[in-house]
Image 1: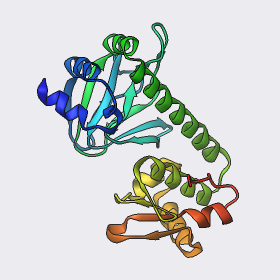
Image 2: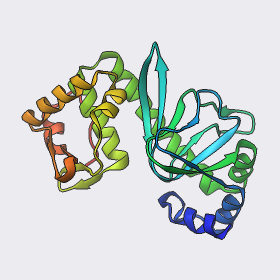
Image 3: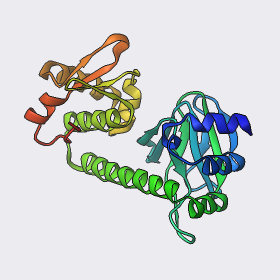
Image 4: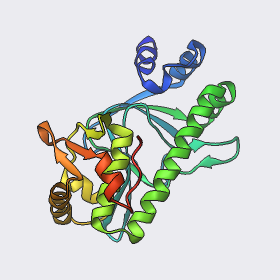
Length: 235
C-alpha cells in the first residue's frame, strides 16, 4: 500500500492533492503490468473500470475496415476507461487501449472512483479539465481527418502531441521521444510512406527540424505566421 501511495504521489496530476485523497485513492488502486503491445481492453469491454497510467505509454485507438486510427497517446498521470461524470452517467469508452511499451496501470472500479469523486472536489475538477481538453482535441482531430491535407494533419497532430508530451523551448516545441512513422501514420490516417514524404516536406519548409536521437522540434513562430489552417500552438 505504501508503495502505491509513494508512486501515485510522484505523478504531476496529484502533487497538490490532500494526503487523505491520496491515501483513499491508493487504497482502492490495483496495480497491473502490461507488456509492449499487450491489450489493456477492447472497445466497450472495460467492465466498469477506470484506469490511471502510472508508467509507460498507452495508445487509444479505433479500428474500421481493417484500418487502425490512434485517437490519443497517454502518458503517466492520464486517466482513461469508463470514467464516471455523474452517479448515473459514465463516459463510455468507445475505443480500445493498448500498451505501446511496458506499462504499469492503476485499475479502480467505476463505483469506487465515483465515491472518491464525491469526496474530493479537487479530483473532480481536475478530471473535468482533463476531459474538456480531451474533447477539444478530439473535435480538432475529427475535423483534420475529414477535410485536411496530409501536411496539415501531420503538423496539427505533432502540435497536439507536443502540447501534451513535449516541452517549450525559446519559440520551439520539442518532442524528445522518437515517434515512429508507423505510429504517426496511425495517428493521422495515412500510409507510412505518406508520413515519410510529408515529414521531408515539412522539414524543407522549415516547420520542423530534427534534434538528437531523431527527436522532432516544431518551429512554433513559423507555424503561427505561415500556416493559416494549422492549430495555434501555445505561446
